[in-house]
Amino acid sequence: MRRIIVSMNVTIDGFMAGPDGGLDWQFNNWTTDMAEVMGAHLSKADIILLGRNTYSAMADYWPAVSGCLIAARDDMAFAGMMNNYIKLVCSTTLKNLNWSNSQLIKGNIRNEILKLKQQQGKDIMIYGSGQLVTYLMQYNLIDEYLLWVYPLSLGRGIPLFANRQRMKLIDIRQFTSGVVIMHYKTCQ
Image 1: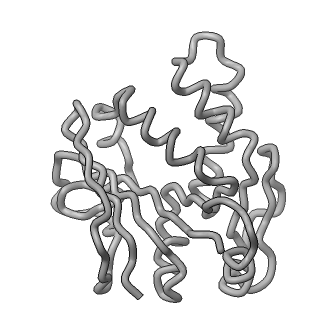
Image 2 (image 1 turned 30 degrees about the horizontal axis):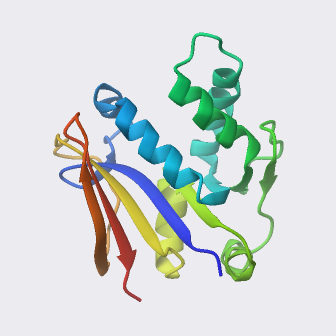
């Protein structure tokens, strides 16, 4: 049975984005050691599940990175995985997907995800995609969280958790930038 793992950047006060959806607070703290860990997590998956907004941003970025000769080595390796993995996109408004190996989930998203979880295969990773994560939380479809906690507070923004969620801490690691990744398993 597949696991769904959410990898989400959050501030120390629990926001996944600023009030306007901004993510600019993430970039100054990103380091090579973080990229290595993120790549190791992705290597345990074979499907990336995305919402419309995150898909649109990534579909513009990752194909360009793989063709860029001056991109960092870590970005190149990660771009290869991002571009080659199957991307399943949950959207009712997108009609055309131009990123390689991308497919729309059609019909009842909950039922499609339940079917996907029952199949044999590696993990399913979700990056960002806050609305999708919130939807999946309602149905207890998320198995684990990789919370990348940044050493700053926004004071207000878009929270990751709006409701009570019980979890068990599996692992914790601090990076040179002060970011801490906290790996949790959900208690259902």
